[in-house]
Amino acid sequence: MEREKEEVEREKEVVKTEKEEVEREKEEVEREKEEVEREKVEVKTEKEEVEREKEEVGREKEKVEREKEEVGREKEKVEREEVEREKEEVKTEKEEEREKEEVKREKEEVKREKDFEEQLDMKDRLIRKLRNQIKSLQTSEEANQTPAPTITNEYLGMLEYKREDEAKLIQYVILDLKPRGVNMIPNMAAQLLFMCVRHADYLNDGAKLKSLMNAIICGVKKVITDHREDFELLSFWLSNTYHILSCLKQYSGEEEFMKQNSPRQKKNCLQNFDLSEHRQIFSDLAIRIYHQFISVMEKTLIPMIVPCMLEHESLQDVSSMKPTGFRKRSSSIYEDQEVCTIYSLIQQLSLYHSTMSQHGMEEGLVRQAVKQTFFLVGADTLNNILLRKDMCSCRKGMQIRCNISHLEAWLKEKDLVQGTMATLKPLCQAAWLLQVNKTTDDDIKDITEQCSELSPVQIVKILNSYTPNDDFEKRVAPSFVRKIQGLLQDREGGSSQLMLDTQYRFQVTFPFTPSSQALELLEIPSSLRLGFLTRI
Image (cartoon, rainbow, N blue to C red):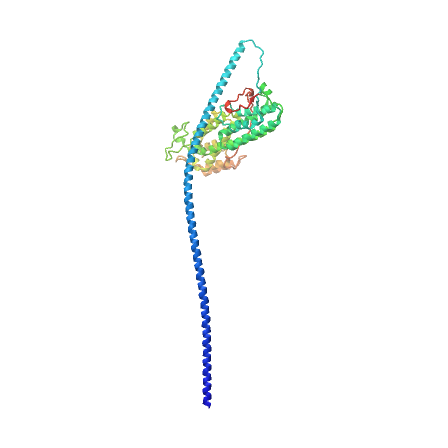
């Protein structure tokens, strides 16, 4: 009985164990099911990712296709642009050819106009000559006949114009006028404008007079602004502006300016308006033109000064120095280059002087301009001597002195020595210092006395920089320099300046010089196209 119970118990345990195994298997099946479900989800997710990747690849493919199309369109566009560019180049070449033809035609037209103007000038001269012959014949006939009362139309030295022609007057007499374009007496432009001023004063028309004066000033300012670097035009308007200023003084009616006037010029003085304020305006304008004029001259001269005054060794071959030597061929490797000589500089100065003379520039003004240019030549040359040891030798001193003598001869020829040679004194003394003996106490005394225009610093600098050319010369002894330095310290008013200021400008003045030109006898050349003016 007990065994049966035990067997039953064992069977129960076996059943329980089997039941537990079944439960475990069931749980495992459940887990497997869940894993299968997860795998399905993962597969589904992977499938969706694959689909998305396919879509991405499709979009990328479409994008690549679009880019290919863009590249194709860009390529077509570039090809079209190249074709257009080629067409433009062909068109530009044709336009350039047309422009060249236009320029050629314009040059021919200008030449024809110039020839026509020359013909007009010749006819004007012929007419004036014939008029003078007629006058002389009439004078001789009147001398042989009994005088009879006659009525004559006497000119008053004025020019009448309509208010609406003012712009045309300024255009023809100021803006369009070329110094070489018309064969007329010097300063005629200034005289014609002043004759118009006189008529406005004669009419007592203040508005017309004010408008004309402002128009003249603005016209001259525009010309010098538009032609900043044109030496000839600046010279022309400097001379004419100065002449207008002189006319405003000469015909003002003020006693101090009328002393040298003829009886007729005294009669021609301004009657109704005081233009003394305008004299200051024209004086300021003339100063502005003068400084611009000097700057243009200096700009040309500066590159020439050192080669002409210092670097060219004319003493090596005196026979090679010719007055016409603006182009002298060098025997060095620079055979094809131009060589500047002192004659190159003199030729340039002569060009400036002849231009000023042709324009009738007042002598005092010419003298001031020449003085300013000579100051630049002397200052720039001296500065280079002080800066370069190779320029501090006895031979260079001889060369500089020779060049200065050529400049002095030119000044004497032009009657410009007075006041101008003084600007070269420092350079003359520097050249002398390079040549003189520099050893004894007597030499020290001579140097301190003779080099009055050089500052102590400049004298010491030249002595320390002195470089002998050969074995026969010696350097300046330091003890010699110290002795001179000691003596020069006591010099009154001694300057410590080493370099000269090449930008320094002497104050310009406009000395009053009355004109002897009778305004009533002035005739207008037809080439000026001033037919709208009426002589009064």
